[in-house]
Amino acid sequence: MIRHISIWLRAALLPAMALAGCEVSETAQDIPFEPEYRGIETRLLEGDLVNFHVKMTGARDVQDLADYAECAAAQYALIRGYGFARHVRTTSEVEAGLWRGDAVYTISPALPDGLKTIDAEVAVANCRERRIPTV
Figure: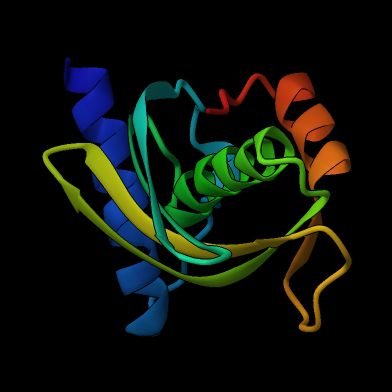
C-alpha cells in the first residue's frame, strides 16, 4: 500500500515540480510500472464517433492511461470491421491512485485524415505485446 502511494505521489508531483522550475532527476521510466487495468466502457456516440471510459491504477503518468484507451479504440475498430481509428481527445483525472480516462476516437475503414491516426491491427498487436488489455 505504501509503495503504491509513493508511486502515485511521485507520478503526480514530478510534472508540477518540472513546471515550477525545480530540477527533477526522476522520469516516468524510473517509476516502477505495475498497472492494474480496471475496465473499459465503450459507447457509440454517433456514426463513427466512439467514447471510451477507462480506469487503471499503477499508471506512471497520463500516457499510460492514454495507451490503455488507444488499445480499446483499436480493438473496437477491428470488432466493427474497420481498420483504422483517429484520436479526437482524451481527458483524465487521478484520485487516490485511480486514474480515469475519457477518450473519443473516430473509427473508419480507410485511413482517416489527421495526425493522430491508428492502424488498428498494428496497434492491437502492440497492445498484446505490451500486455495492455483491449475490449
